[in-house]
Length: 439
Ligand code: G6P
Ligand code: MN
Image (cartoon, rainbow, N blue to C red):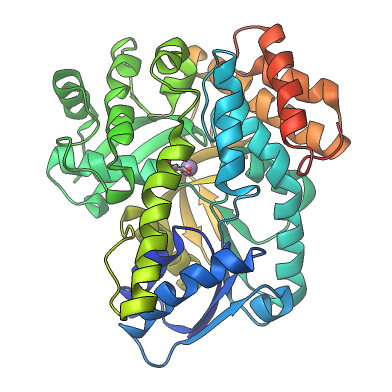
């Protein structure tokens, strides 16, 4: 049985992910679960909920809650990394500052994602170093810390040999919905997909060897929704604002004759429309703090007082996917999943060293990407621009370069002019004084 550490133990996602682990103990046996965070108060609030989830399933799994990296990582076989540098307070800034300039305010897309990247790259590398120092020599870090594309590029640049698998649940959440549309199970579809994280396209959806992408496109064209019906979405993506996100895929798709886009492309391809429906004084960060976070904290308080744990956290495809990936790494299952990997020719006409999101077989030694061939000129151009923006942001972080940060912001498709880029960047520098390297 494995020792598993969750880094970012105080996350609102932790109870749901631990629940996903508990229902899969037969596949992924655990000796110990450790929670590690730098915010002990937050982690201590959530830990009793997590312990209860564990005890409902097992008396024997050891449980440890710590802010000491040596205690957290010593001998660990797996680390799930879910850090949020600056917490939701800074997510709120990432979303509000661009919106005040009429630019998309989003956690990972646009200036918000770039700002979050500047905060996260160096702490992520510190985490990798701590894991390498204390953990089992074959330990794997399954990393889904955002902004995943930029974090993955930062890791590639600074720790190219680290045993880190970078993942995001957006493709698998879309696959879950696609399966619902087609009336099959998620496990029964095999997709082809190319792009960068939060920036890509499904090109085939095979069910028993038959490509049902055309049927999926017809469904979206007719019902305007990337799921079977509005009620049928994973709990994590079921808020009204998320249902809107699944709907906005229709205009993005309708204008182009091929493929099914990742819903996040709406931020890059129809930013004006998005901004028109966003409120600079109440962004998604506020929805999450008032919704998911409050509900979980209230449940923790109720549990403390009454010993009864209300059902207040999401168990869904996100946790299931992380466990799938961990199983495939642990037992060399070579399962096919969409993950973020160094390109190495998988997308033939993108740079060899780009961090791309494509299908890969997950082996005990890491992901083996599947060749997706050449992508059309339109898609390649969009990808190269986004890639350049992300790479320049990483270089800005490593070199402390204001010029490169400004180039990264200017190249991002959500940003209409260099004047917007500069005004937003300058406000973000002030807001991130505690977190960013000096630019
Ligand atoms: C999806 C993305 C994540 C992102 C999350 C935000 O799951 O893949 O990268 O963090 O959505 O969801 P939220 O409910 O916090 O807005
Ligand atoms: Mn993601």
